[in-house]
Amino acid sequence: MPERLITIATFNEPTEAHIVKGRLEAEGIPCFLGDEHIVSAQPFYSVAVGGVKLRVTEGDAEEARALLAHIQGGTGEYILDDNIELAPPMQEHVPVSTCPNCGSEHVAEEKYSKTVFSLSYLLLGFPIPFLNRQYKCYDCGFVWQHK
Image (tube, rainbow, N blue to C red; front, top):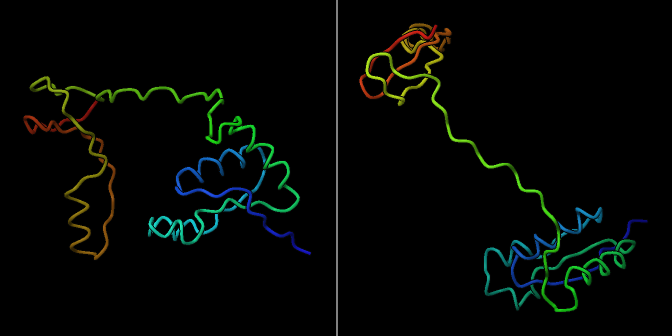
């Protein structure tokens, strides 16, 4: 016999519901959102449909309610008390090479020969990519092969 879904919380904002849903799923409690799309498409209908409903199975309802009480901290608002490890900062794009003609770093690698690619498409009806490792400077237009 399948378990029923129990609504344990309602939200006026789908974003807040997704945050709490993610927190419960991180704790191993599978949960579902009801009326999420209605409220997302028509925010003024939130009160009419009862908001976005956070639902869990009957077996997980007590554990989910206890976790929600812990997350709320008795204030009625959700607090973030997790020590989240942030991703390392993105590194800046380092150019592969500099132009030997003008010294510019505004260069790009061209992996395929555009001429062969275009001619094969024109004559055969489908493109044949031939590898061609060249670099092109966008400032002076110089094309060279990297050694």
